Length: 114
Length: 113
Image (cartoon, rainbow over all chains, first blue to last red; front, side, top):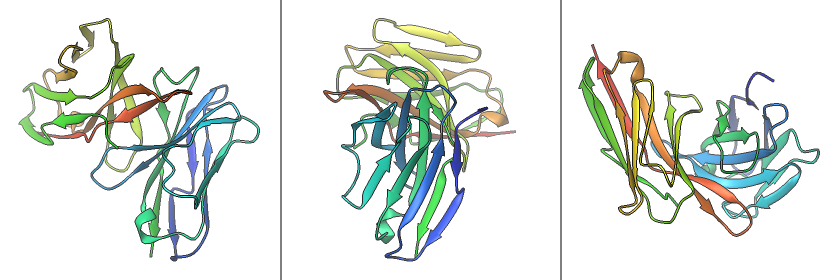
């Protein structure tokens, strides 16, 4: 594809609802990352996939957060029983090879939990 | 946790002036990257400098890296209003299984006409 695509662009959830955020990386990109960005802050690492393997999930804030990339392309970040502190922009990024190279970012999903 | 700290947090300059942003980090790195983010958008890669490089140029951008001081600087020359954005440095950090990019807190640059 032309770039990394994320959907939805905006998501409003009531506290306690489950949400699913989708990321479509650039075709052929091996590595996929999820980041969380609070207002006025830098992106914070959540998790990393190499193809379908989740190699690092050390940044996931709690067991309410779950990410998958079953076929090594599209990835979904799921947040169960959302809390107000989950409100943030969730950014997805992909890179062609390993995790040392430059990342291509999507525009993000802005999640607001009311 | 944020690996890098950018300085200053905010910078306001006039068009045509140069803008310098600094980044300090904590651990050993393979490379350091700079990204730009326009309001409400994703990050865009600007430049990558490897740990064995000291300076790199790309158009109006100049990046330096001092691994002994664990610091980097980004210079934007002859700034334009379109350069208004947040700028982040990012360092790769090996976690034992893979490397991940860790971003700093960012510098918000405002370029006025």
